[in-house]
Each structure stands twice: as structure tokens, then as C-alpha cells.
Image (tube, rainbow, N blue to C red; front, side, top):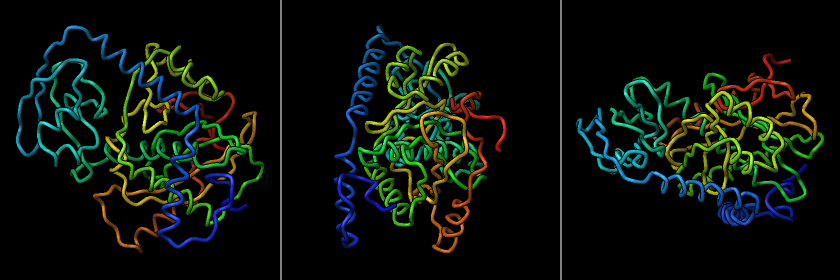
Length: 340
């Protein structure tokens, strides 16, 4: 199998490094599907409707706890987000903040409107206890990997995103499981490099990761052409008071409880390390597990240390295998209780 699977109608010719970068960048932008554009438009319309439904604006008191100094901000209920608070505190704080901690106990997406007066901490990658930030980052990497998978294959390869399980940094890789109309695909090193390059270029677009809570009917409308998501949505909604949380980056939309990181620019080094065909009972074609490893832009490792992480990410991630009859995990995926 060669790189003709990816990014357009022709196999990639031989280019210099700079020309390859330019060509893949153009191909990725051109390959966004009409379905993705329609989903994005639905998201935009619903987001606007929810903002307009707020009505009379009420003020809330947000107490910021953290450097450079603690302060109290008057913000707008159901409209202002932790990111809006961060912008009041300065560009450095806004750019480095990955996720908010509300009232000392609830992780909160940076672009999700605050619902009442509260205290917030803005967490970043270099805090003394980064476990919650690392988990948020890993989850976001899986989400972004799904965006790349959904847009990097040629039109004659049918792609249906299935799910990504709860983030487990200790596993050594972030993952996304997707159904492809390829019977026994074993990606070459060149194909893995293409996938890695596509994810790097996508993240360099510096897109914010948006968040929106919707009802189950709206979620089913957004994912009407994805049989896996439409199967998962009723169970997700039933466990979340009838609501489903959608995340959007660029034109790509997916389901997750979140939270996610603030912006794709937070990703630094990225490697898509391996792809495995999984043994599942899901009809419609093989399910493949895409695996990657990444570091935030603010974390620097030498080449030798990073290569150790890459080699570890090449091993099959032990996360639970998707099954036809399963249960929802943290991120709304249908998974079996045990791995065969």
C-alpha cells in the first residue's frame, strides 16, 4: 500500500521537503468533505441560537486564583468563558492556559461559558501537579487525530469514525478507532509520516477548540450519516440528562465529555506511530486503531528521549476494543469490558 491512499486522486510524486509540505497543506484544505462543512454549519447555527436565547445579560463574579496575582472579574453569565477571563489577565496567561479548574474541583473547558459566580484556576503544562492537564491534552490529541483521519484519505476509501476511549497517558499513546473500507491495510513508514505531517499542519492552523452542549435530537442530526455515532448518542444522552457535548475544531465535530485543550497551537511534536486492524464484531468493515504520541509546545525533549516515546507508541495500545454490544466509557464510546 502506498501514499496514493491519501490526500487526493494521484499518488504523491517525489518532492523536496519544502515542496512536500506545501503540497500536503493544499491537499488537506481541499479535502474537507461537504458533510463536514454541513456539520460545521449546524454547529455554528446552534451556537448562535443558544447565545441569543440567553436574553437579559446577568453579571457574575469570577474570582481568579493564580499568578500573576489574584483578582476578581465581573463577567457575563452563560456567555463569558474562562478564556475570556484569561484575556483580561494578559496574553501570556491566555496563550498558555490549557484548561480551567472551577471552584477548586471541576475541570472546565476554556471556551465553555460559565454558569454562575465562581472561582477559577487556569491550568497549564508546567504546573507542579499536571495530571489533569496531561489527561486533557491526551484526550484532545485523540480528538484531533480523528479530524485528520476523517480528511486525509482519498474519496474511494470510506471512513467512519467510531470512537476514542478515555485518555490514559501511561499507555504510551493516544488513539482513535475508525472503520475503513480497506480489508487488510498495513501502513508503510511513508504513510505514517504522511499522517504525522497532516496532523502537524492541521494543528498549525491555530484553531480554537469549541464546545457546545446539545440535545440528543440535534446530535443525531449532526451525525446522521455515521452509524456508530448514532448508535452511541442515545446512551450518552441517557447518562447526561438528555444532553450530548460536541466539540468542534475547524470543520470537524466529534462527541466527548471533555474537557479539551484551548487551541491546536498547544501541540508541539506529533508522531502517528502505528495503525492496527482490530478484531471486533462491528459490521460494515474493519476497525483500525490509529495510535500517536505528542508533546505540548512548551515541553522540550531531545531526539533520543522522544524516540523512546515513539517506539513505545508503536506497540498496540491495550485500551478496550470497540464492540457491537458495549457500554459507554468516559468519552461516550461503545467498548467491550475486556480485550480479547
